[in-house]
Image (cartoon, rainbow, N blue to C red):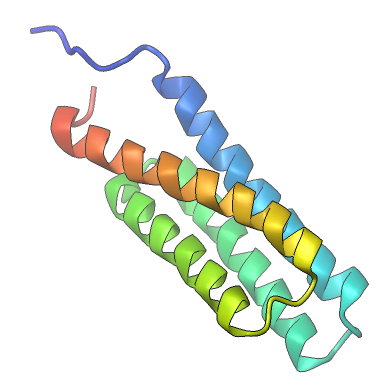
Length: 121
């Protein structure tokens, strides 16, 4: 039985990893270069970046992928809400990160639905 899964699966997975890595880099930049090092905000940004990197690490093991799609989407959405309700500091960088985060949310939600529909190859 052949699957009707799109052949762009590998590219979409690479894109999800790349977006998560980019989000991690942005948060590390905010934590190490923008906020005073050691401040509460600096520590928070670094931890946000670590979570994205840890997610990439777990994702690359191929375990828990459907769960990671949902958790990643919710986490990125949570950070967007946190930024919005926290006064939208660093507006331009926040908006650019919002584009990355929104793309990440849409892609991981799509990957989750596709995984649930077609299952593993």
